[in-house]
Amino acid sequence: MDWHSLYSECPNVVLGLIVGVSFLLYYYIDAVKRPLLACRRWGAWQNFLETHLTILQERYWPTPWCYESRCQTVLASVLRLRLPDITYRREVLQLKDGGQVCLDWLDGSGEAGSPIVLVLPGLTGSSQSEYIKGLMLAVRNTPARCVVLNNRGIGGIRLMTTRTYCAANSDDLEEALEHLHSVHRSVPIVAVGISLGGMITGNYLTTRGERASRLLKAAVVMSIPWNMEVGVSSMERPLCNLLLNRYLVHCLCHLADTMRYQLAGDHKWDLDQVMKSKTIREFDTRFTAMQFGFRDAEDYYASSCLHNKIHRIKVPLLCLTAADDPFQPLHAIPLEAAEKSSHVAIIVTARGGHIGFMEGLLPTTTYYSDRLISQVLNAIFANLDAMEEVKREADAYARSVFSSDGDTGEDECASDRLASHETKKDLAECANDDGFSSQAGVKDADDHASVSIANQCPVKNTNDKAYPAGSGLQDGVLGAS
Image (cartoon, rainbow, N blue to C red):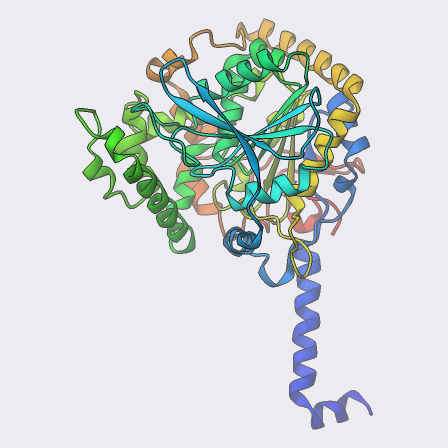
């Protein structure tokens, strides 16, 4: 039977086959790519990652029936709901200002004296958040003890102060690391931050300099908004992004409402007005900025930005982000800065959304991001001597950068800077760095983020093929199709 006869007898079947094959071909060309690794070429950190992370040589196959960015973001969270609760051993840490956080130690992970992985959840996340449980299941087989840092008032622990937490303040993280270092001396520690937790980790690295290098062997962050002003503007775009924005601010308001007793009183903020917030920007203007001494939300976002502070980092850092993350437009990812750094590497996948990274036809309990983080942790702890070489190169790079620009790389009064800020140009840099404005970021950020890299820096892949500015993902910027 020829095709003409088959079409005459079963036109719907033939059309269905044509549509199906066309979709699979489009999916393969558009979405199935090797990740991009942006880091200084021939450096110790890049060589380490390319040698030990076999996942970098694989194509990332996002789930074909929901690989759009918002679908990945939402459905990944829904599918992770089926994960069982994780058993932890809780340690309550009293902080210097009278506050408290809790350290939830994963049961059955590592032995006494083994390395430590400190995990920082996202915006309202805790040790029982879906993506944290997925990560715990993936890394529990690493030769390390895993512990989750629950922020103030999170995870069932009482808020003891009128201060909560924000992306620009890493004081609580520093106290937690100092505590771990004092109790578990000479034990390698790696910090893993996700979303807001990654921003807190990044700001700790940029403000603590030598102290961070002394306490951490390395750090890993995932799905972080590098440029908060551009990221928040992207989340205000109708319709899907704005709906995600509304959901997140609902979660924030609910969390603040559970702390109403502690947060009520004669303060700069009005809780009744806070509860009326409809967007993240409104919530940050009415609450977060006032809590931490910023003039407004834009001032807070300027201090939180990481894209223009990479040169201050002295710890080997690996960042995983998706080109279509609705929380962070592609062009705002500081690939050019990473290409110049000896010890900051950014891995960009063509798809993945925000903390999504589902893969395969039927996503299981382990996602692409979990596999990657598990691989890098295993590599770090199995090759501590090689990591020392990476840190020596990082120190040499930091000295050369700081000696040329006069920056010490360390903020001796990081808490005071939250109110005063070292520079008053941060906001302008946040909005206009790398030649784009916040409005341009909103325009180009979303639906076509994974289709082209407009006005992006030249990037090279592991095959030494250079891609000029403006080349598209379909041309191979994120690896061979």
